[in-house]
Image (cartoon, rainbow, N blue to C red; front, side):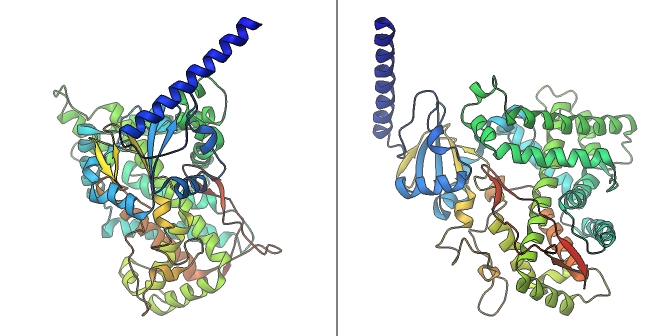
Length: 492
């Protein structure tokens, strides 16, 4: 017993000295300050929370806009507030261009595709993806017409509810998924397809799991969590189902590929693979195709659908705001034709409401991690080469210096004194700079057309007996996932 006690005391002393030495070395290297980490687990106990963004805000109050945390044994830097986030994304964007360590995404994607890859791989896949997405209509009239057609399917489903309460989550996912599926697979799915609905629910669940306590723990100490049960295991299981679905679609395309009739993104990638089959350094491999499609499919479905349903929840909760949107739609579009993108410049209030809903939702509060390409100076501190940096996008979206009432829903944040739409540099729900979201233009188009088409015909209300919808997140970790809520779509 004495020997065991002496060994334990000696171990504690050694670990304490190690932590003290690390903190002292950090000061000498001019690293940003931060809370003292514990051996092996780092700052996990101080950071993990059911409201991770709020925990980081409090740490910023103590340590400043740039501070250091340890995710297990890995040192990471947090940039908090619009100014430091802007310096990283825009002013010094090339120095922070690489994707930082994100354990769940790294494991799921194996550093392939367009989201977590780096270097020449990222450059080639992103350039190809941008060009191909544009070729198949992204940002053009052709995809606008397709969204308008999909909106009619959505309206048919909403009319069938006859104003009864129902949860629109799956319907929103179906509508947005069919748009990206049209570009990727030249295909759409019936809203009643059970396999399709199941896949969409698995996708939504995966995003929720990634921000849960278990999901956060996986980011902090993945080496330990890989050997333990928990929500992270379900996350990877769900992701594998999505990969199987994508693999099946790719196999169908391989069997029917016709170089004289390129149907979609998958066909374009397959042809690029053929063109580069003799290039030993090519990035256009089947593995990269699979992960790129999963990247585009999941990002193009879940983020837009979650924002759309949250926007509908906000409008049900803010009836005066909804009434102003109704008035603007009636005045600019009327009731005889579907809304179009040409109407957007004439509808500043509606545009402000959509932007404010995205700001208020704060869907990806921590953004996607970056990594320094060299030693970089930031806010007077030195960030060593190879350091993972988390840019808290939510801190820009809720910066009190940029938004008068950052924790209140107010479309006035995006309107000037004359009622015209007003841009704000801190409005970056899609990130900013060279690694901003590939699908930003498509997502904004969908949100405008779906929202205006729905409100042209319907009044979104609380179910009978419900007086308030909870607009706070269901989980708030690396993502803010809203609660699901029943709504009533009553004909106007």
